[in-house]
Amino acid sequence: MQNELKIEAKAYLLKNKIQNYEWGTRGEDAVIPKLLGFEAEKDKPYAELWIGSHPKAPSSVVISGGKEVSLNELIERYPEEILGRDVSVKFEGRLPFLLKVLSASEALSIQAHPDKINAGILHLKDPGNYPDSNHKPEIAIALDSLKALVGLKPLSEFILAVKSYMGLREFLGGGNSNEILSSHLFLSSEESISVRKLYEEMMKKSVLHPQELQGAVERVKGEILKKEKGQRSEEENLFLQLEKQYGSDVGLFSVFLFNLIELKEGEGIFLNAGIPHAYLKGNIIECMANSDNVVRAGLTQKFKDIDSLLKILSFDLTPVEIINRSSSEKEELTYEVPASEFRITRWKFSERSTRTVDNYSVSILLIIEGNISLEINGADKLFKQGDSILIPWLVKELKITFSSNCQVFRVSIPQNR
Picture 1: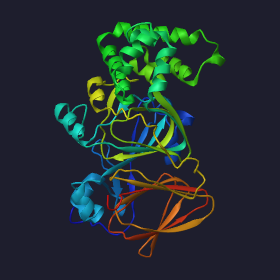
Picture 2: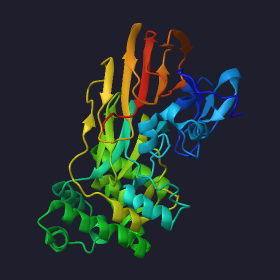
Picture 3: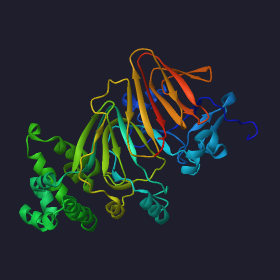
Picture 4: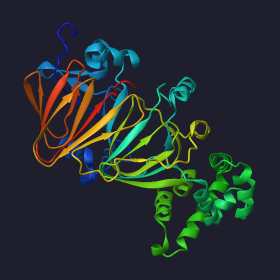
């Protein structure tokens, strides 16, 4: 096959794999089947569409005659033609990013991703649970909306949360909140160290004393249920909802201790290494370094690794920045993030439009709505909603004609970073 195959300066259609995790959307709410144009199977969850070369679920490339070849196999054979020499050298012959469509009807786990050093350590120690030695900075961009818990709250709000629920106060050492605050939070003049002490104690105690954790969850639940429904906060309603699903899980307290955010269409958040988070509900475009490493510590039936989470966790209390806030109607949006592995542009047009794009690196296009015509070296090719397209480094320029009511994402690799 190697003799038959030749990588050309043209667009290649990709075929991608779906992950059917339990938290995915189902039936009429399932976004991924709608995007790809097929009917959802009854009661089957559609959680993620993976677009890239990760060995867990590599995309296939449609080559001449309709034959399909695994993208990671193709890159291994033709790294410079697809990635370009500089990218191939820098990222050791691998496509550096992984693009996903993520569709959540239920909360994902409380989690964080390791930096490169910790990723390597975890992979060596436990390759079964940590299959990659790479880090995983990521961006989430709302297709419609996204609710999420992201990052620990600042000290004042952390104190308020502890004071607000007797069950939480008792779990952390006693019923007197002033005693707790003086013995833990004010040991350090630095907010982040103070929050770290309390959060670490809560997480460690949940492992050592599960019966006390169960009692604390029941106590907090009772405190919330005593309130009239109209008097409960959004966080309290979320606590009750998640308690039905996960029971006495220490991740329930993150509802009060993490920042609850909501993204509108087109808005994004960047999650660097160590930032704790949990997506709660919504449909997003997600792009990350090419890794599947996840350190989980709550709201999950999967493997939990609280010790590792506490080692990698960032206690930077600066609120996460919302990228492109209130910009959903702009025709062209670029999502500027510090990652060296990916750069994302979104085009959204209500009327037929054309753009000429310099292709300085390998890139992938994903059509969310409408269709596009790609002109490369004088040759036109039409692509439709749901198509994802590989543009190899050999292509230096592409002219994109967008249909009316069209939305397209492009992932490329930043220059000089």
